Image (tube, rainbow, N blue to C red; front, side):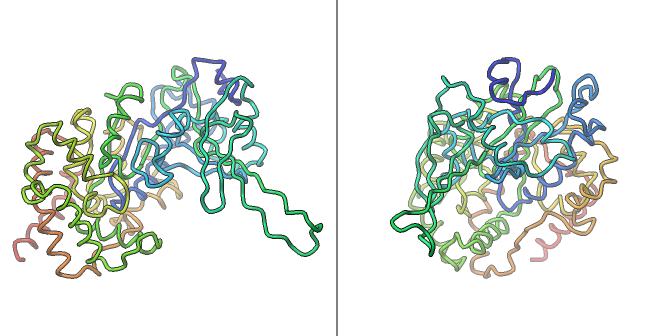
Length: 454
């Protein structure tokens, strides 16, 4: 069947369903998630997996049961689309991020149906603003009413459009420009109204397009106390979800995230030691008993652990120390999800293997189809070039600016959490990718030798 082109067609055809995320990378910022997204979202495109750039040939008839990625899109008011690496829908956001589930509902995530040719490789990157208008509410039946929220921030307010704007859209009322020379006296310039699509997904018949997969790389899902329950309650077949957990040396991850937000001017405390002291003080004040004896985390009853987690962790960005305590996230997620739904990839391991080895490990776990011919594609290799090939996980800030005092404080804090994580992964048999790769084995041997010398 032909893919839908209007919202009305979707609402009229119950057999069509949105391609919701089923592969998650729920942890953590500054662990190579941007690099991994750029590589996997490119390498598993349907034109490589199915061997055709025509959307009509991504069906079971032409592509069999091979699995490929159709990422979500954000479409700007000017009509230009960009892939959504992070949805910030279930949690893990700060401010307006993370409000989508609570205030916009699941219809924000499902989005409105977008023509499937948007995902063809030769599709234009930008379309007319009238296309955005049509996607948002022109094709909605008059009796469909959606609720929206109002906000006033940076002179932008989200407003309803006749009660019929789709929750995945927002109508921006931009502040009018100040009066200028030549304006009629006594008249203010008219307000400028624009529409933006925050989430657009392909709506397909799952029997005809069984290979379509979507991914969500929102970084702090594991640390968010409520995210696992939301995923379990609202996504179909939660036992089939896959979680690829990227981890990194916690000292380097904490310092790297702080450095990033300092560069973005989001972080007000410009000295890492001061910021570290503030967060450690919060942890100590939240629960002094567990702070002094972290091993209790593994033995607390579920109810007591959930209470501690909800009180002391928010799962938001800029919690540099708490988001590096990976065992908290694993216990939080594995209350509901099985160990075989998780794959751990260490950032340091990604840096010493080839792109082919990394993609094969990702495909073996997620069920996506890896076509080795993709490595001959120039664009794909530019996104998948690891340190072994001259680049590696990008945008990494290292701990060169960390003082010896700060490093010592973090080592003392993280040591028991690293030990608990190792015990947890072994006890439950959580799969660790690439651990038997010769380059990874050699890297870890060098690390152990360095630690012995120190």
